[in-house]
Length: 88
Image (cartoon, rainbow, N blue to C red; front, side):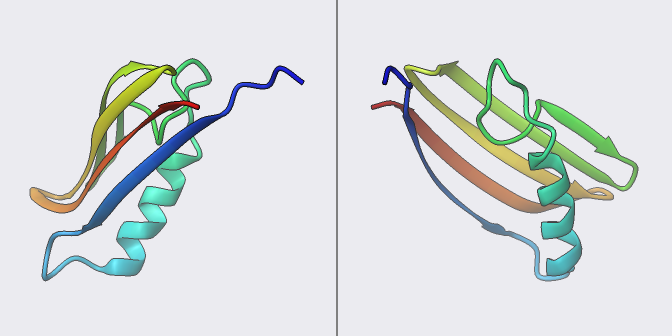
């Protein structure tokens, strides 16, 4: 078989003392379902969910990539994640 396999490592957490953990991770899960087939690492570049904003800044290609993912609730940063990976 000639299936390409890539590896991704990541670390993230809720960064706000006041953020609702369940609501934050529910919004994150919704964002991660909206995958770009050409760049399938985490979620899309931006999702504006009203009070919730998801941003994913990724550079590279399937060969090697890295990125930062952020979530804001209203005007507060509530979640931060860094990731990287590439083809094996």
